[in-house]
Image (cartoon, rainbow, N blue to C red; front, side):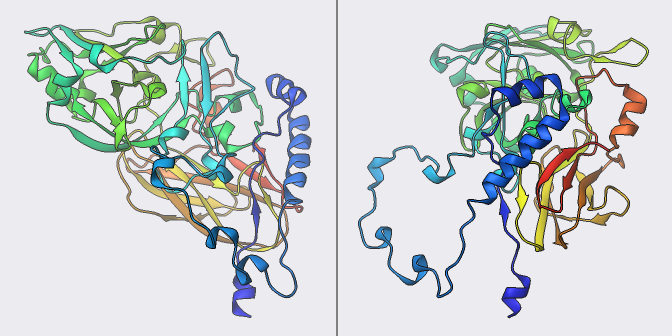
Length: 443
């Protein structure tokens, strides 16, 4: 009886493929009501797939199954391990609400179906400005030049002979959650926050490479990083970030070499800074005495303010959090106990605290932070919750180690206006209907 009373309620996963051509047009035009009705219909379909127990017990546990009475596959059948075919719905997906220009594209990580804080390499979000490229590491070179005593060209072999470090950090695109600025209620957390991932990166500190080249760090207070893809991505990095020892020239991710879509064979890692500065397919580092004003930091990745001016070099990703379960597109199918869980992060340090509300921010409870809690890394939080079958508004609010508190959308818009694209770190709200359907709302 105790088990029956305390067992968790069932939660139907978000149907990630429900958007048809009409729904895609709705996302692009921002028609909130259509998305809500499409989401509700998809959730109802998903609810119908939930299995029910037979009255006299389940045969799958009472009787031997084929997999228990036959030989399995040999090791050689899968030289490189792949996910189960039953997890094929968990995949990176392109957003129907973002303009696709040639090979410039975005794919979003399925945060709603992930555990812990590390993103599987095959689910790491992608952002390409000219498509991703395959580079032979034996032919790749990195040039270090500018205000250095001895300009050098490094092979991958030479870089990988240097002392290396491995660290876990989040990477977030500056445009993550950008569609919410336009009051567009994209349906799931994969589309609201999925330009976010967290991995263990391995490489050599840029600080050590610059020392090897005799960089003039007294006068040369900026570094230009240039990528080797067709877009020639170039970004300015302040020297104080390099001096901290956190900035890396990385070749490894999650214990293996980088994937091609993530910059193989070499990328820049700039913890806490928007993803566009983590230049992929890195080919050149230049030390200079002022910001370089590259095309990708003058014409793009600027913030339009209410007075018509543009903020430039707003690179730091401020403290942010989101509930990943229950979240948009999912459905609660029974009253009772649930675990609210989500992710929190800050580009300025560690997560200090996460509070969770189930009534739209009227009342808050402090969530449990799961370890490890690392600087500029995702932190998983959880809070037990008993759903009584009524309407609820779920939200999370993070406070980081500097004392910064995640703002509401109203607070953010009071400072930033309504015409921004980048750096939306407002509190995300999920509405739970009496039917158990969870949808995206703004308060």
